[in-house]
Length: 104
Image (cartoon, rainbow, N blue to C red; front, side, top):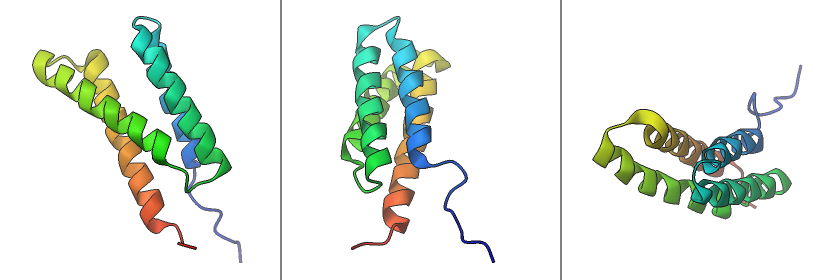
């Protein structure tokens, strides 16, 4: 019998992908580089300790709020809608991970 190794893609890998997506937007706007760096830091912290979600969660939540307002006002999917969708998926994945992890 095989031991369950957890999710198919570890959460911190998704975090690094999310950070790259945000930082890529930063090439156009410098705030994206800042938030991409914070998301990268959060993903790194998550890779070291799966319970250390706070920097990543704060970054994702802030981006979801800021870009959600931009998406609401403009109605344009790119780039605001894309970042809102990615941020909400990351927030949901973090929430599921925190709720399903065993507590010490």
